[in-house]
Image (cartoon, rainbow, N blue to C red; front, side, top):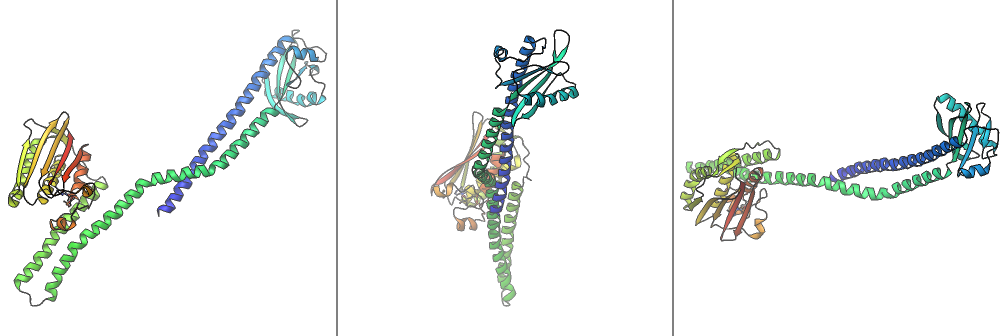
Length: 421
Ligand code: ADP
């Protein structure tokens, strides 16, 4: 599934990159063409101005090469034609009749355009020329036409070479662009792949978790159906076992529901100013009976000063409950110590237990969904391996941090850092 998507995305990226390359190349090509044309036009304009100043009166004479030198004009560079009002050539630096004939068509274009001057392109004897045609006002009040032809073979060659280079570059860079497209596609697919893998694992883990209580329930309900001679006490035990598993299942289902709501962003966090000291004391009081039942000592050191945070009261209570519940679950005998303090703008909440501890190997995974260091023990405790992942989500939603320090068989300390309000 991802292979096809990867290929499609690569093709899409490649098309985008090629379009970008084509736009970029076209821009360079047309910009170069424009610059060459502009510089040639500026040169022709300048030349035309000089000639107009020097030759205010058109005479019936041939433009002499010496005069051309005066203006720094060589017929190789520019061909100049001056015509009188009857459009007869009065001066020129060429004897070539092709120029006289072919350029005369451009004068009609000037008349039709109703402009003062005109640039056009013509081909004379197979050579490309840019022709400038403009009116020319003589001193005697008469007018004439000046025409300057510039050979643009060089300009054409530059543009053709540039086009060839860009085409060659485009063709040779296809493989390179395809490589980049492939990399870009894998980069953009990475988070989708990860989330897909997570979803797959989540479904597999959830199904696995649900299968165990279902199997136990099924077994406990099958026995009374097959066993005709069971006593009332036996029946009671089987039904009780099945009933207890429904409790497990309902805990699993509600946890899964909460996780799927977290994933789809359906759970909203409503932040208010909370007195964390008071909330902590209330939560500890509500769980204290369970500690007393298991004979685990629960001590506290809560900062005298009022500590306020901006947070969702229900979620923060759930967070504290998860950590206190874990500390109790994973401490067979001993104590749990809770502290709340303030360090500059940070609020520190620690829950330290003298329980079974967590090995270094497990420590890096405990915040992952369905991760349980000791599966058998956790399952016996009715644990799913979801508590800490939910706790982490709550802390992150409050822009805080959760850390764990633990020594195997010695105990663990969970620290939560939040910003004070
Ligand atoms: P669970 O529901 O299994 O407790 P959690 O996500 O809360 O799930 O915890 C994940 C795992 O981290 C637990 O299964 C346990 O192995 C380990 N763990 C969590 N808290 C403690 C603790 N205070 N002491 C030792 N191990 C702990």
